[in-house]
Length: 553
Ligand SMILES: [Zn+2]
Image (cartoon, rainbow, N blue to C red; front, side, top):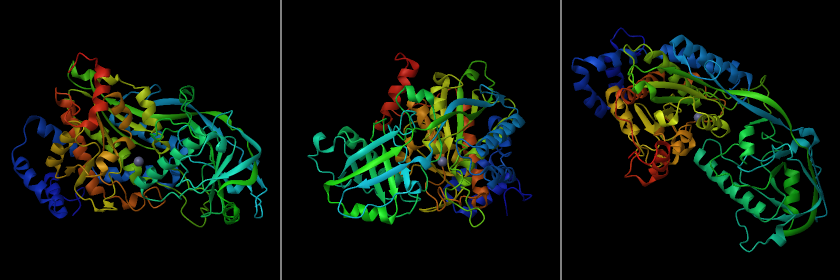
């Protein structure tokens, strides 16, 4: 029994799914309304939402997450192909082009690359034998805020710089500028865990704090030893950056650490280097290093958000907008991977091909409405989420419709997989910042009608609010949230995130739920509001007031 193929009416199929999933509470709530003869808006909405189909979504996602698109890295040909595909679907749905170039919103960014073969590091002094370090063993650190390595002037030339050994987890409180200034700090940083984003962000934050402190104490470089791998796994690939953010002093992906300036980080991989590290005494080591890392070269690159508009039907309300979005980029192809022997493509089917297909599917379904919703609906897919939400942040700085007339955003993340690390998530949908604004309740009401339990995850709903593409509009004051089925799943950021593992039946219900919420938000003359009772919403309420002028309450 599959919802898209049986001869049951969709209403019947939905009930079957609810029963199968055991969502009794939701079913009990749904039944009386479903049994009633739908009238007016309800019949119109239902007819549109019934267009959301398992086969259609499977078709879209099996292309977007195919190996042919090579993991949709920002920037890449695979990403461009995905953008063209999304634009083609918006065109097919009859959406108005809402970008600067048809359906595309073009960011004219720069691609910065370094000649890795010219990296040089050698040691002198010390008590143990100095290792010969090859360029393959040298990586520049993860792009934490303030890291200047991708600046044109960001070359590093140190000669005979003394090494100071510091345990990053146990930094002496009394360290002074006299002790650290001009010294290369050597340390060992914890390996980043796979599949635990919360832990990863915690480690990044700690690493960032350490690097920031070392910069503050005058260290020109932190050298971290990684005994876990013999060679660089990443971090040297060319990177995109926004020339505007350079002039604003933010030259790297902003991971939400607040633009703190840090010391540059170079990671040395391999057991031989680790033995050298082990041989060094704590504190002033008497050893020294020569370090040469050449300045990067830059080339222009275009990266694109994709935007289509379903124009509202109300003469006044059509000038206001509800945004539905997802990020269409992913991580690209694994470094140091041999495609003849193994799977090298990070397909990103769930993350966030699923949300992207949700946007496409809703564009197609909702454009069939006659009459259209009162407010306009803006369909957006973002580049660069995996680089630190940079595509949605770009949109926040360059909105295509006025932010003061944008009443809400629902962003979809990871809506396809139900095999969550905390157990199966069938018939459920989590909302980040659930009770920060009325949007959570709008989604919950929609979920009741579709047999989906929309809920606030006790720890993750708030923790993840700032980690997705809703954040830039929230920062601007727009009630903006992310809806997702799974926070963590087994193939998160790995090559196994393939479209075949998507639960499409469940995804159809989730997409209909989001569609219903969008229709409610777009048809109601009442704008959603931030929740004055929730202290966590306070900064967004401030932003809202700024956006709308203090006079509005
Ligand atoms: Zn994602």
